[in-house]
Image (cartoon, rainbow, N blue to C red; front, side):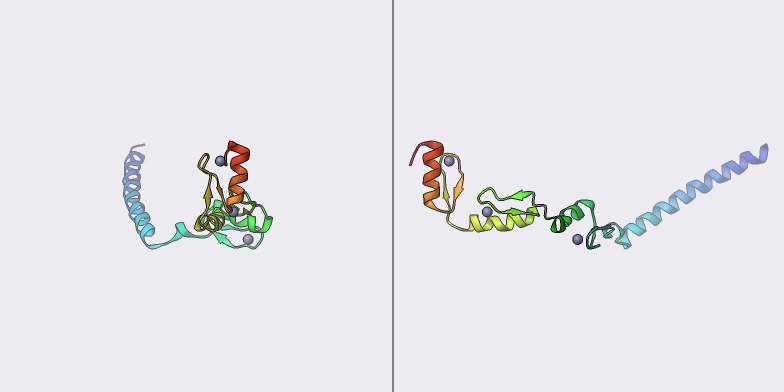
Length: 123
Ligand SMILES: [Zn+2]
Ligand SMILES: [Zn+2]
Ligand SMILES: [Zn+2]
């Protein structure tokens, strides 16, 4: 099958050419379209769109009531790390009473005293 050989070579050339062309197209697409930022992950509760699955999972806690982020300085819990950070400014913004032994912080001097008495046996 002589002709098939040359045909194969033509195909090969075409593939090479089309590869170059598609590569150029892909680059062009990457520059022009924002398909990578498409919000294709939808919340199963309210259908709100998100760009990645993690964001959906975090958002869905709004609906499920899950609060995995707890404040280390009080009893409050939060659905998002950002919410916890924002909340903790309440603690860090105040002049806090920090334990000199373990750096645990307290909103009131009396709490710090109790802590130091119990944990470190000091005043
Ligand atoms: Zn939702
Ligand atoms: Zn707190
Ligand atoms: Zn301490």
